Amino acid sequence: MPPMITEPPVGYHFAPLTPGTPHFAHAVLLYLTIWPADGGVATITDFFTRYAALPDYHGLVALPDDHAEELAGFGFGARSLPGDWWHERLAAHVGVEHPALQDAWGLVDLAVAPQHRDKGIGGALMETLLAAQPCPRALLSTEVSNAGARRLYERHGWSYLHPGFAFNPGDQPYAVMRRELAR
Ligand SMILES: CC(C)(COP(=O)(O)OP(=O)(O)OC[C@H]1O[C@@H](n2cnc3c(N)ncnc32)[C@H](O)[C@@H]1OP(=O)(O)O)[C@@H](O)C(=O)NCCC(=O)NCCS
Image (cartoon, rainbow, N blue to C red; front, side, top):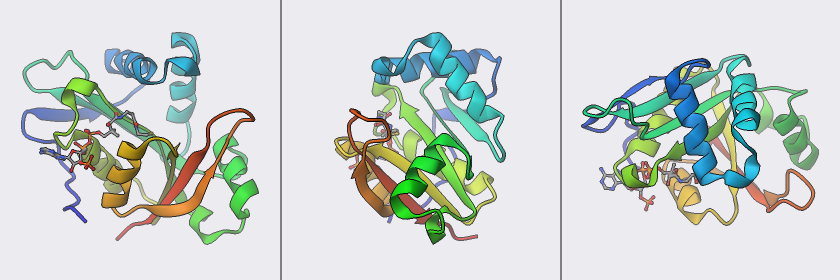
């Protein structure tokens, strides 16, 4: 496993991902360049904003030191709780009592702009968020087809809680990954 670096790579800095800020709007636009089928600006702004209001929300943007108006990447998540859409669908597949679902933090999104990838930003965003949140374990889902993301998560100590199911009928399958965190 690589060292769990909780600071930005040289040449970048992190700032909070907070609703109503320019960085927040830029993160929505970056999301839509990667996952355009998920909706438009209003839909994704609403999606991000709802997560930002959940318990133990943490979100970060990565910014180049010399172009701080350009967003290099972002990540966010919140406590995964019964009653939440994602948590309920996962519970339906693995059981609501599954230990991985108890006191767990969900990494909802992690994205780095193509020109800033493979520099350690994604890994550092993830580790910094995990170090900041209070839960002893974490969960995420990613497309089974997203081999690059799964490889990154595997290298960072995540393992498979479920090999893949469609969260919505007709969607592609998502693998669900879990990680126990050293506290
Ligand atoms: C997945 C994603 C977030 C990774 O971001 P990233 O900033 O490229 O991640 P890292 O740089 O930390 O790691 C990526 C690779 O670069 C390598 N790397 C890390 N630091 C490096 C450095 N300083 N120099 C060169 N390579 C480095 C890592 O070893 C890793 O290799 P791997 O692909 O073989 O695992 C990014 O590819 C992305 O946004 N993809 C589209 C959205 C997505 O799939 N999100 C995740 C699913 S929700």
